[in-house]
Length: 226
Length: 407
Image 1 (cartoon, chains in turn purple, orange):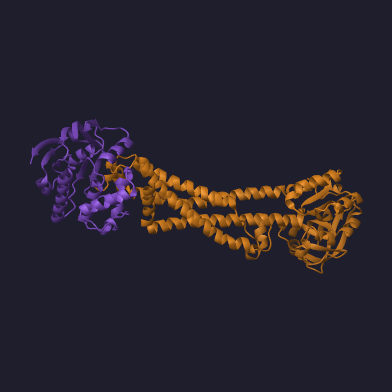
Image 2 (spheres, chains in turn cyan, orange):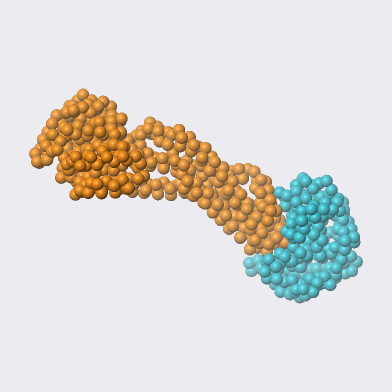
């Protein structure tokens, strides 16, 4: 088992109003899955994704990655965990605007400090080819279309071969044709490289392609196999 | 670390207008600081130089029981013996010496009167120590006098007029004499211009009925070695007091120091205001990049690595702005240091004197190394602090909090 979540709770506090985003969540994910967390806005899908991805802290509960509890209190330990194991794809792409496509994709490898410049170049050019962006490596993110930016974002998440990629509404800002191409790309990568994907989405297109749908409503889970 | 530096550098380049404005503010502040600091040091050096050339010389020989409270009292006089003369003639470091006699008198033009200090000088020997005669219109002749320019103006006297000087001689007798004015003296020193009357030393001794003198002023070959020269002379002329120009100018030096401190505080404030530009740029930069910070943290960057990125950004701005400022300051200062400016002609020597600067002619600025050092240290410290504080604030947030700004 790649991910196991036990009794996860998260409440947001805003003045006198408390909002329970995750309510005693139990959930697991196997290696190689292509799973979508689905539900209406405010249902808690992004919060669950963020907690599993260690970019947000739950109030209580446990999260295991390959059997190891990954609820750490120290930010550096969390950073190390994300660096070594996770990739992120964001709804708004979140590319670094001052860096070129090439530099954006090599950034996780530079942070990882595991490869030399020659190896990094090979890996970046290979992933650029894989996501269909060969020849655009010197462009800045703002010189690309939304679909191309999301491809860069996917390449950035993928380049270090993470154990799991968290994709938060990856098609929400794209038109349906571009969105479909992006989903196809991610599905191919999942099938070919056995990369595990966990989405949060309410896009029917992703739901159609996902092999497993995990429904979330008012912070509680229900599940259906596709 | 190289890629963190690269991102920091690219962040600066990306914000061309803001970076240019910050550089301009910082560079202006630093160049202004250096030019003004160098100028003020130049004024001080010139003021001390004028003081030496018009009042103190490098060393003075005075009576052992010289009364500082009544410096113009005839009780302070002593005999210029042949022993002293032979010592002064024998020492090779002495480039010139001149004996003087000073006393208090009252000058009048038959209508108005004014208290003055009469200085009896030997025209020829005085030139070897002081430059008063270079600043004199007309010349000092026997049985005549030269008046300070302000004094002459106040009493409406000019060259060729007669004036009346009243004083007590060595026996206490009140004496009044009529003298023709043969010269007007305009120095950088307001006190000399408004209170001094020069007469021939032989005339002064004759009028005072004495053969003594008040002091012997000495010009040496090196003003920095005066303490050593003082000791040599003290051992050879034990019955007289030998005083350095630093001791004679102590009050002036204290005023200069106080003035310098005041100016330094104002200049440092200007420097700090220009550094607020960096602080503003860095705060804006950090808050604008909240989402990028969240992304970088999500990619696995540690808080320290993100912090370094902003620290580099601030330091690049600080170092570059500082270096540009130091360069521009040096370029401007080059003119002021090597060509100089006649501030007296521009602003009026008396106005400058009233501000505490006894200067005439072209004033050359210095190369103020301390100002360079202060500018560099302050801009580094401001840049580091400006980057550190806002970055710290953002870094305390969870990555998701940074990302939430646009999602």
